[in-house]
Length: 178
Image (cartoon, rainbow, N blue to C red; front, side, top):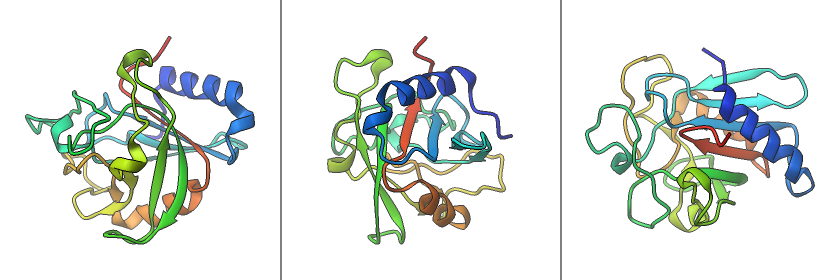
């Protein structure tokens, strides 16, 4: 299923239009719906020229899902919380660390943002997009949990990172702003 959650897509497009001058990469955008079950596509890459959408399974932080039922319900911007963060961010540079071809994220949503969005510590917390063996794009079962990262299946991670790195808008939320 490659249908972006409508309210979240509308939020992202509005943010994109209002902040276009500060978004270096205008060709792609990512929308991640943390309200969806982890066994569903919920990490969408949107081609801003054609409108084409690619959907992917993604992990969330293990402490965002304390009962390990596949739903992220608790979010944080605190180092060591092992929780995912909500809000607007920009994709940043690729690097090779514990996981090859990982991509850093720079959070833009300050404390006090609506809907509990707060992610300005993403870079300091090492909340990055990377491949992981505990995410299986071909499975509709509950996916594994990360330490807060939106990890993707190893089989798709390189292609996604190569498409979105370098300043694309990245929006992770669990409910629409409007």
